[in-house]
Every structure is written in structure tokens, then in C-alpha cells.
Length: 264
Image 1: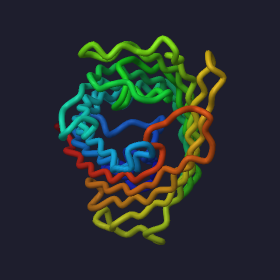
Image 2: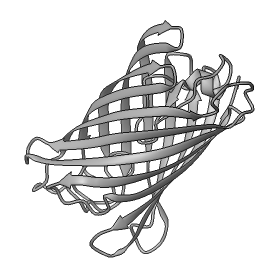
Image 3: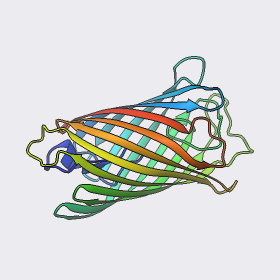
Image 4: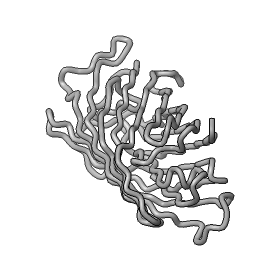
């Protein structure tokens, strides 16, 4: 969830806006390869321990319309840190309206994933917890140093691997939405691609389970730093505002590192 507004060949210019808890409608630069390491450190409410999830990603900007991510899921859900599954994420940008210091873009995306962890909560998360898939749309408006983005997606949970079947008492379908806003704080004036960019953003993250009429809503402020127009550091905190569904670890931090290789 971050904004960087520079030139036409750098990380900042090509991405235009980047968010921590959701993807914008813009894609990573065409013909680039990226590596991303997301560390989720969440407070587990029942067991009173730290719930740690590591998600490494290999990212590929196929062209200016299409990008693909291959994800791995690792966590300490068991007695030790262990691999739990893999995921594939793809996003296709199908609409762009560009102007000076502003643009509006829309994209469609999907995620399909497998996971072998036990199913231990009502909330559905196919990005690290559940086997299943997502289908959604995202629209992003850039207004000079401010970016606004809205995401909606359908999510279907399936049985996890290793005999961990999805409980028949829980709702396997979720409707999700994210509202994101970000602002470029530094630099005040752009003089070089080597300048460090600092962005502040805040996101509202909601999920509804139609079959059980349960809902949750979180707020997530974040800071992002872009170094040399190529490396990225995100630090965010997700906090539950409301929920009437059972969630194992709704509150906690994410620390993400990312690096892009251009013209790969």
C-alpha cells in the first residue's frame, strides 16, 4: 500500500502505487523479476503465543498488463517452523486512463493455493491458511502524491491437504474488500532516482461470510521505504476493529522486504 511517483524506468515510476495489505491495479515493471519476503508476526489470542508466518515470493512482470507471483507458505503453527503449502497469484490490468500526475487503472486478479495446516478459525485466508482460490477486481486512482484503491474479491475455501478437511459447520465462502489510501511523504522535491522515498498508508480490510452472516473489519496503518528505486521495505500493523467470527490471531505486524531486477 505505498506510493512512489517518479520517472518512467524505475521501480517507483513503474509501480506508481504499492500497498502493503493489498495489490494495486498497476503492475510491476514489464520484463522484470522480483523477490519478496513477508514476515507476519501476529499475537495468537487462544494459545498466548506468537503466530509467525513467512511467505517468500518470486514475482514476474510478464508484460505491462500481466504479472505473476509464485508464493510459499511457512509457519510455526505446528511444533516447529515448517512449510505448509504454495500459491499462485496473477493479475491482469485491463483498463488505464493516464494523465499528467494522475491515472486511473483497473485490473482483475486470481489466486489459487494449497495448504496442509489444520483449519483452526472461521475467517478464510487462502494466502497462507486455507486451500482454495480467489477471484477479484481492483481499481486504483493516483492523484499526484496520493493514491486511492478499492479491492473486492470472492474467496472459496476447500479441504486442506493432509486430511485436514474443511469443517462442515463453517462457511467456506467469503466476500472480501479492501479500501486503501497512501501518501508520498518524502522526498519533498524529486532530484534523483537514488533518493529514498517514504510513503504512509492506511487500509481498511473487511470480510463477510454470507452463509453464517458473520463479519470482520480491520485497520492497518503502514510505512514504506523505497531505496534506489529498486528495493522496498514495508512495516505495517493490522488491528481488529470489529469481528463476530472466531479468529486465531487478528492483530500483529508485517515486515516485508522486496527487490526488483529490471530487464530480466
